[in-house]
Length: 112
Length: 115
Image 1 (cartoon, each protein chain N blue to C red):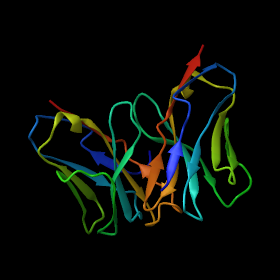
Image 2 (tube, each protein chain N blue to C red):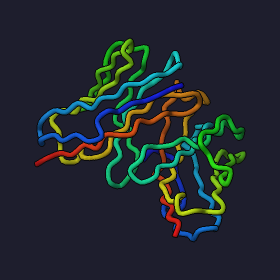
Image 3 (spheres, chains in turn red, orange):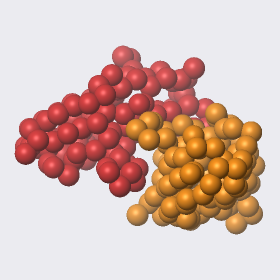
Image 4 (cartoon, rainbow over the protein chains, first blue to last red):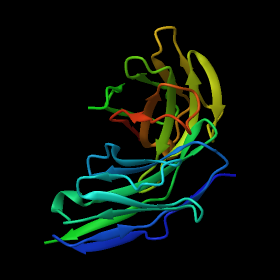
């Protein structure tokens, strides 16, 4: 069965510093995407970054980047130059059969 | 804006009642997914439709049902509501049927409060 584990329920980071959120997973899919979603207090699900599993190069979107290790089934999110607006719940999502499976989330607090 | 619309944004109703949540997918997307998010929880998959046909079911209660219409919009029906059904209900859409290969786009959600 597909599983997703986010082992950090809560993280804090100082404004302008860097933080890494971890995610490990297991999936039987062979060709798939992996995703990080941000959920601010408005509770809208906002796609932060995606990684195609067949690509060895780690995805980068401005201040957000991933460290994807396919063999280890690890998919961590690095946020550089953290901003107050980055404070939110972050969920990683991996594909199951016909659906996404979401981790339990990491609440990120950004300290001014 | 993801292009996925959901109505209503908020819904307050009493226990025992029935409600219908509506979702319109992005133009061109054939798959619709429904997820439930209770307070401070992750997203739980309920059901998926592809081009009008049910493709997958998750932990969806028997009191809940859904359908996808020929114009591809979808409705989630919740009946005999209980306090525990209070949650945020998301709809997502994607182009294809296999979630592994296609990105899902999420609507803004419908916040259901059962009193």
